[in-house]
Amino acid sequence: MNKNDKNFRGPSKATPVQSAFDDTFHDMIDELPTMRSSIGCVIPAYNEADSIGEVLDSLLSQTRLPDVIHVVVNNTTDNTAKVASHFAGSHSRTWDGVTQNTQIFVHDIGRNPDKKVGALNYGFSLVEACDYMLGVDGDTTAQPNAIELLEAEIASDSRIGGISAIYTIDDAKRSGPLENFLISGQRAQFAAFNMQNMLRGRNMAVLGGQYSIFSIKALREVMAENRQNSPWVRDSEVEDSLLSLQIKNAGFLTKISATSRAFVGGMTSLRGLDAQQVKWNAGAIELMWPGQRGDTKGMPFHPNLRLRWTENVSMLVNVITRLLFVLLLAGALSNKTFVFSPIWLIPPFVATVLNIKTAMSMKARTWRDLGYAYSVFLPEIYMWVRMGHFVRAWGRFAKNSQTDSWAEQAKAEGGSGNAFLSPLVGTVVFFAALALLWTQLSLKTQTLILDIGWPILGWTAAVQTLFMLRRVLKSHRGFRV
Image (cartoon, rainbow, N blue to C red; front, side):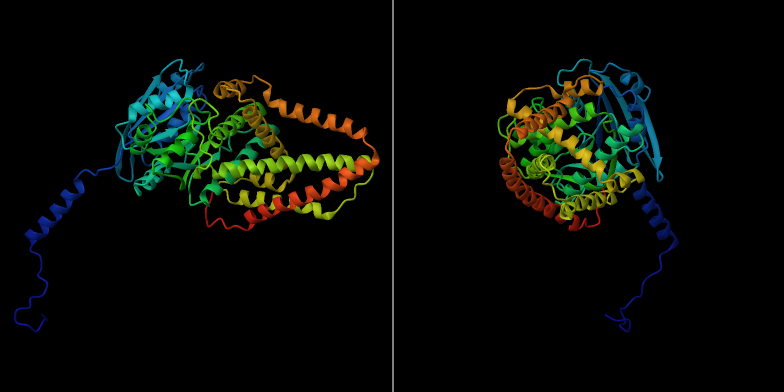
């Protein structure tokens, strides 16, 4: 029909009554309540009196407030519960014209033999009626829209069982040369780990407890599939890694957010860093190697463990090349056969370029991060520290010792224990024994060893350099960590 047809009528003009009705109708639609998912936040808190206030302030400053926040204080010997209790009660915030409300509850469950795992499971029982559970550590803050971004991502795809924020070690809390060095090293370590996860389809190997959101549906399926009474199990060194594997096994995805960021408290002492890293490494070995601890089932071929295997093989090669270089260099200098070749500068040069690229990928990088990367020597020293953690973790595996790593970490953070010195002592004894043995060898035997050792080191270093170069040339595809 066209406008020349006698039955054609053009667009009619709305009468005043119709216009008034339309306006009223649209106002009624706008006033209808908007349905949204419910988020229950759980904060397991152990001796967090110095940081729990900042954590709760950060949560209450979010553009998307959790519907309820439960602070689960456990095994605490400081004033964590007292500080947190000042925040207990109702809170509201108006953002973009919308008023949101939340309730903060503080639970001091006293002595808890299951430590963080027990606190998490206690918290889960309190938020099980929600759609999502947000786990936040007692020393972790986040950017103001972190929860809003996490919720948008997990709600956009029903296949996602959990999403981790991008973790960055808090740069503000550092003082003194040692703390500056350790914080810079941890920031670079976290950045490299996060970037590798992002470049693997944003598949997150570990949904860390620092700042992760979980689908309650996924957690329930994990419990049903594994015949567990709670999502987290107490007989694992790394409860978050195991849960991430179980979520994946239940058919869900484990992701790292592309945009949501959280700031984690770092270890500021060698003793504390050693306890934390050995616990993480030993826990990963449990999952990589079947049947090592309690009823925790090893899953060596699980997709989430590919990055773990890569890290461990890489660390093994780092140990071999560095020890071999020191031994061969000392041997060559002792019998005056050492000849410098510029080709040996290639591996440290490529490693420095990779460190700089990692620093440049950090969204909140500072001059300290860049200075650390450009320094050449600081990343090398931190690598030796990490090698000590690696050796200690595998030594524990070799002894098949059942150690309470949570207790060890708590003791180390409190300034007790000297286990972190064992790799240093062992290395000194090892080098001293080899030096003594070296002096007993004839010049001919020494020369033969050097003639065999240098080519082996050269080829190993060449392969290692090629893998580093591959990472240097690999595009970050716009991701920032």
